[in-house]
Structures are given as structure tokens and as C-alpha cells.
Amino acid sequence: MSTIKEFKDQQGGILAYAAIPDHYMIGASLVDKRQHEGVPFFITAHAIDATRNIMIFGLSDELFTTYKNQMLKMALKSVPSVIWSSIRDFVEPEVYLQQFAEALSQMKLTPTATADLPSVIGRNIQKYYNGMMTEYQAAFDREAALGTPTKANNSLCRSFLVRYKGTAKSGADCVVLGGMDYKGIEYYSTVSIASVMGPLAGMLGSAIKSRKQAESSRQFGHGTPCDAIDWGSANKFLLVTPAEYEKEATQDFLEFVQTFYMEEGLRNQFYQLNMQRQQQNLQQTLQLQQMAQQSAQNLMMNQQRLMQTLQQNSAQMSAGIMDSWNKKMASDARISQARSEATLGVNVYTNSYGQNVDVSVSADHVYQNQYGDVYGVSGNAVDDETLTRLNWTELKK
Image (cartoon, rainbow, N blue to C red; front, side):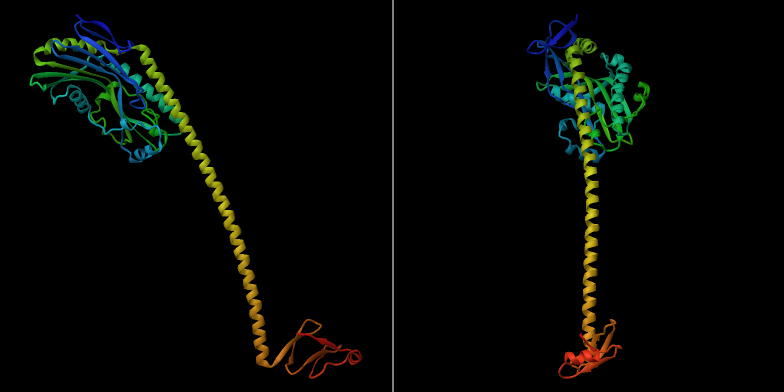
């Protein structure tokens, strides 16, 4: 007859409760390390019947994320808090369970039968499913406030049990029962920093579907559109027994499964740590958004300064070009005039009216009278007395 036992760690802390007969040696351990953004820690419990080589195990939470969108996967490299071990390619629930069963039993297993798992979650699957989706909906609402549109494409909660047969290293025939409270959700969203920060981040706006709708989808893990998949288990169970003790061991195992649950204080701590993690991620997202906005503002200001500099440089270049052009034109005009004077054998003088007049190059001095007439004189200049008497003015080039 099984009774509810306290499964304690080596320090005497209670981690879980489950029914198990008295002749089993029991124990538990806490793996106090974040396995996933949504799993701050997990527990393992065991019950061993050393006389008959029967082993029973119960393990709590495990979660993985598969990124279908390569842009999201690449963006993970810029997020310092990524738990890389939680990123894994999706496998079907049955494959996931068999991998677990073979790893723990250390045997190559062949499935022979499947049934529903009568775990606490399995007997209350609709309630658990609604709770899971309510938790995601809260994440949807947080992300909506940040302006990141994401929708759930598909979701699944399923508690199932598989019987396997295998052969121990000793050569004895063994029966292995593996059970799992499976959970998962597919979602698609626009790429954002927030959407790569956890199982509850980067998703919003999906209405809760009924259990029937969730379980009716046989394509979970392969839906479209899909950017990422969160998948894993709330609990995993395993029985390893020699084939000759299958009946008795199965009864003990099912009683263990039906009553196994994490100690309530520890479970509350589990939820609290997740809430703290979500708040940290939210703050980090807001900081990154502020940095992005500041970078955008700085970029705009730099672009404006660059445009102003280009405009100033353009104006200075234009003024320089025009100045050079004017100087060139003036130089060309002087050269042209000199060439013209040399060709025509004349020099150009400006009279008192500002007009240019041509005078033979043979003239050493040029004078203008009061009527504007111009005279060229070779030889010595006219003396001042004569200039005054004639009312002449000497012109210069």
C-alpha cells in the first residue's frame, strides 16, 4: 500500500510529494540553475526498490525554444543573457520522450504501446492549458505595450504514456514506462530584440484556444507562419523494471505519477523568479529601445550637420570657382588687350570721360585738351607752363 511521502534533498529540504510504498528508498535533488528563460530551476525525485531492481523517477520542468526565423536566431548573438543550451531543434513529442527514456535507462528502447498519463496535470489538462495560455497572454499584453506584434499560431498540452521494451547490460529483459506532461506553442512575430529574450517574450494578441482545438492539430511543430516554437514538459516520469516484476512495478509507478507534485513554497519561488526575470528582460528591452531611439536621433542630427557642412562647402567651392573664373576672365582680358595693342601698334589710354582711346605706340606722352581731343607727342614731355596755357591734361595708360 502506497502512502504520500516527502521527497527531500540531502539537506533535508522538501522538494516534492508523491505516493510510494514503504520499501522503496526515496530521495530528491534541486538543480538550481536556469535551464530556460521560463525554467529558473527544476527538481528530480527517485524511488528505488534495490531488491527487485525497480527504479522510478520524476522530473519537473524542462523547456526548449526552436527558432525557425533565421533573423531571430542571428539576433540572439546581440543578447547577453541568452541560455544557449535551451535552444534546440524541434523533435516530435514521442521522439522527445523516447530520447529521455533511453538516456535515463541507459538502454535502447522499442515502443510497444501508448496510453494517457494519469498525472495531476493529465487529469486536469484543460485547467493547466488555460493557465499556460493565460501566462502567455500576460506576455502578449506586455509586448503589445512595447509595440511588438506577435501571434500564436498553434499550441498543445498533452499527457501521454509509452511502454517500451529493452535489454539491460546484464542481458535481462526489461520494461520501461515513460510518461510526460507535454506542452508547446508556436508563434510568429516581427523581428525585435524583445522577441528573442525568452519563451514569453515577443508574442502578443492570441486568443486562448480550447483544449479540443489544441489537440485536434496533428501538425504541431510544423505550422506556418512560424518564427519560433517553445516546447518541453511540465513533468517527466520513468519506470525501469525487470520484465518479471512489470505488474507490481507498474502499479507503484502509476500511484507515484498520480500524486507527484512540487512542494508549494518551491513552486511559488519558481513563479517569482520567472516574474523577476520577465521584469529584467522588460527593463533591458526598454533600455535597448531608448538606445535605439537615441541612436536614431543622433543619426538624424549627424545627417543634418553633414547636410549643413556640404551646403557650406558647396557655397565656398562655388564662391572660389567664381572668384577664380573672374580672375581668369580679367587676366584673359588683359592678355587679349595686350595682344590687340601689339597687333594694332597702339596703346590704350583712358580719357577724363572714362573712355578708352587708341594712341600710336610711337607717342611717348599723350594729352587731352579741354574739348576731349587727344594728342600723342614723341620725345620730351610738354612743360607745365605750356600745359597750363593750352589747358592740356596728360593721360595715363
